[in-house]
Length: 175
Image (cartoon, rainbow, N blue to C red; front, top):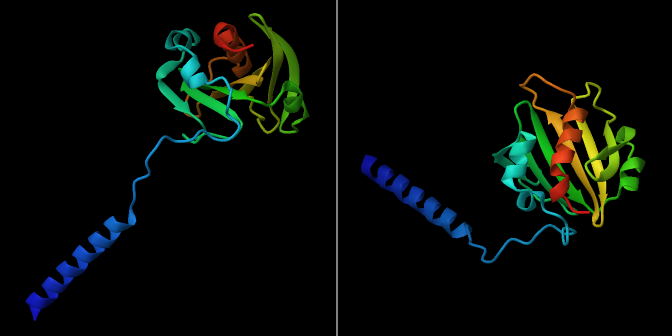
């Protein structure tokens, strides 16, 4: 009796493995980009490592999208610095769209390199740990966002770092 229970369990386990294997499938072909990304500047592909290093970023920390997922209407790439993350957003949204968005405030006109744009923060960022610098582009706009890494000590203003990074990135960003 004991032997037949063991054989029964073994057969049941084999059937479960066989059934589970039959549930998976392989999808052939290339992944399609998220809708609305056609013609957008791709910061992950179009910003050279040498420029990232000038900004104080580690090219090996590159992460595309949000948690690796592409977003419709956006091309997003993020890197780590010594105490901050820097993210470059490429989008069809314009500076006027940003100014109308109630999530953002404290708008200031800025110049970085050859570009005129705006600097601002999220309204909910009471600690001032993040800052955006955004420039118009033919496609819409390019956003540069600096955010403090939670486990690190903030060594400078996020807005100051964002503005300096914008100057270094200026030559490789689209007009």
